[in-house]
Amino acid sequence: MTNLRENGVLMGVAVGVRQESLLGKYEVRPYKPEDAITIYNELEVPNWAPWLRASAETLAKRAEVFPDGQLAVWEGKRPIVNISLSRFNYDGNPDNLSTWDELMGVPATGKDTFDLNGNALGMMSINVHPDYQGKGLTKVVIDAVKDRAVKLGVTHIMGSFRPSQFGEYSTQNPNASIKEYIDKKRKEDNMPHDAWLRALTKNGMRMLRIDDAAMVIPDVTRSEFEDYKKSYKPEKWKQIAPSVWRCGETGVWLAGERSAVYVESNVWGILDKNGTS
Image (cartoon, rainbow, N blue to C red; front, side):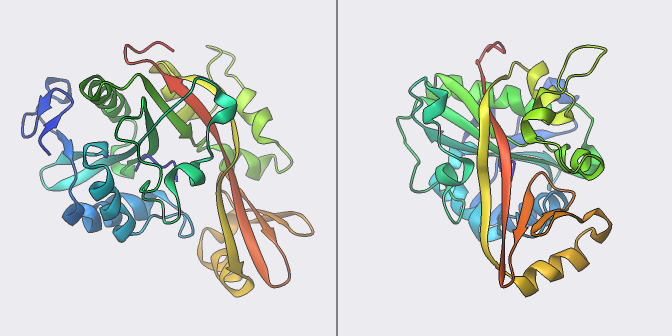
């Protein structure tokens, strides 16, 4: 999942203090394990295909493993954005970066790779409630992560970022490669065609490399696969080869006679805390 799915003080903003940039309407603070079911229902379910959703149990475990790294933007008691951070060590060589799955683990709690002294924060999943998209909240969250990095003494802010509009693009261009799409720029400003990569770039992200098999969902039974085709946006599914299916999501399904595998590519990128990469 674009998996930025991250008590005390929030990156220089005390818990309960409303940020001026949000006009006093919202509050940014870490979410706790007991908030996980609300996060799941309000943000995880509307943003992710069923095979990609983190469970409420997984979200709660993340808040236990790295409580300073699970943040949410709240409108009253309702979470409208959440982000999950990981903490690891980056040696400066993009080729040595793990896949999203390797860094977050299975289930995706980050437990086995969390490094309390790591020099990097990974923005692993960000969810914005559909009703609040396009309202400037991405910048609020990124600014909060930058502040958190300063507080924790972390050098690098990174992420295996999901080119979220590739699914729609590949529906119209079924043979398009992820690299072709990532390299695609808008004519008017030479910014990435993908809205999420464009928003990140405007906030100082520099792309490092493609995370080819960022998220892999293996061992899906053929009956489960057929159920997904019928129940999740059936109009988006398109067979592009004898065993290859597009489904309107960023990844592709490889379906055999008895089982299927979902494979999704992301993009590793890096931001500096001051907004330049």
